Length: 223
Image (cartoon, rainbow, N blue to C red; front, side):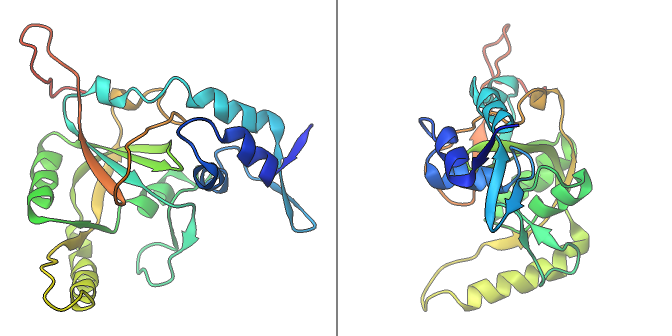
């Protein structure tokens, strides 16, 4: 088995649209498997790294598979979350059990009123596709089924703390929410590991699906 250092593995994943920091983040999310540690050096199976590159192309097809809005989350590699009352870590780790992965990405998202209303309403009615990316690579897919009411108090406390720390005169009004996530539909089949380029922005973006009804030309809500 050929082993590559983290630097070698990172360089191999630096294709157009994936920079050094993004490639390193994806590796730390274990997209190429868990590395071996030898004297403080991380070593990756070269074949696993090459497999990551193979999965990255062609780019993600999710937007072409649904007419619904898509919540695309940008998450960092796994990191401890000692302040949380309901999870021990947040971020991305593709080798962790599925329930832990869902908990790690379903909160906290600071939303404006309109987006919160959309996700609460459409999520409960039809579901909103949720895609988590790390380093521009799709690491998880799920369906937003609504807002987790059981964590409302914790979210409110986070919101008040952020509002209180905002500069004087700021009109910041976003509130922190945790989602209820269900399993992804057929729109996610074969998409894990693909590249999902969303451009510059904050921790998440809401994108519109492009799937069209052949008879009307309008967006289809099925996925």
